[in-house]
Image (cartoon, rainbow, N blue to C red; front, side, top):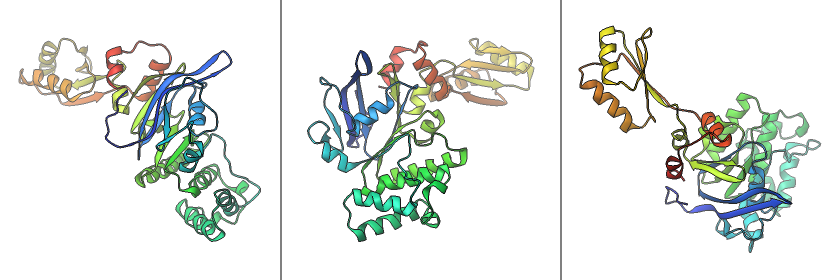
Length: 325
């Protein structure tokens, strides 16, 4: 497995395996997460995303026979305490105690990290301000909105100044505005040098945030790459040319015979992976006829298409898949 960056790896795993009884949840997956990036792990329910997070965050053990696993430079099996000191985890379900105030939740977390009373109060005040929770700090957390609780959850995770944060479906159940606010929080964390390992059911979230995305299916990594690389894995991409002059349309149709014609709309739909090379080829062939399109649009499959193709058994060109691994 290769990576396209020279950044040091915050997480590196080879042959990660986990079985429960006769059920194989993770079947020898490889992961490489560069420091200071967002890595998104996608997959349907039961694909093993949360199991991967639990293993990498030392909550459960990988199977014997798994390969080398390192988190923040530490061997997961040999130095779990060192790994725990370097990471933070925000799970699917909030760790916020609704019976106490937001400030008290933060101070409790500071105690768990063995911060002095003064250090704990300073960290609490800074993080509550950072997450726009100062005005609500003295109120019971049970009165917070879903978005506020999630921000408090992440603020609590940051008390120990982790270098790596695992966010397991952090925006599940949030309204669109709260989701977008959470995206801003994640971007600010990464801009500060934190590495984020994200699992999500929202494909637009991965598209928006992740530097690299891996799709997990049946316990294996079906494909990995940037969002743009993954979108080129599935068929359906095309260039659409629209004309207002019927003569120009007919000339273009002869020059681009592979294009699907729409005689009523005077448009051609030419299969394309959306790459600059293919777009240039289409335009060069059009230029050779002295014809210009009045409108040109490039359409590529979105991550929904990729997700369904990779997790439903739809054929994906193996050479392309291998190219982005």
